[in-house]
Length: 211
Image (cartoon, one colour):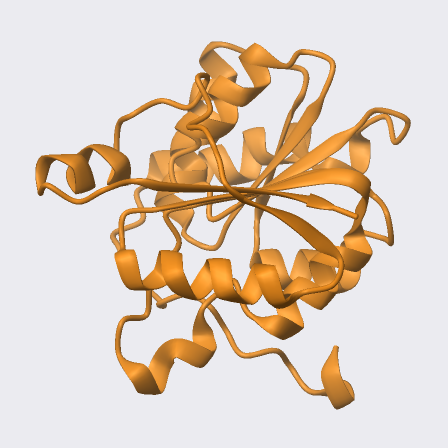
């Protein structure tokens, strides 16, 4: 953590309605999917800002030999994911109701990740807020430490300015190599991707590897 100070947050604090069902999901189902329970010998991929977890579930189904840690700060999405896992268990899905930056700073050790997914992050379009974007120099330094050599970093966005920004930051970082990539065939199209496509925006895929 730079100079002992908290990192600049990368998310909006949204306060949606929390139902009793959501609370029970967090309390009763959540502990079963605590990442501390996993076999550390298995490869682990972190999904940052997983929302309701559709991409994490699809990745888990397509990669049964890899664990995925789905992280988000917003309770409704995490509760939705936990309820989905309760109805249709996947032994390789782990869930954290937490800021991914806190997980990376305090809970995930050097070289502990086989990859990181950042799908449709908050674009923070105003110039004064761009320091809050997830893909930025200090976060990339952290990711470079946590992703094992050869591990991947996938980024998807429907915001042209964010795509330019992310590519410039990644291309400038000495520990990452890559560029525009293919859309992962396992990733569902629902959610932000569908909204972006319906609005006529281009979906940009970036694929980088940790050197």
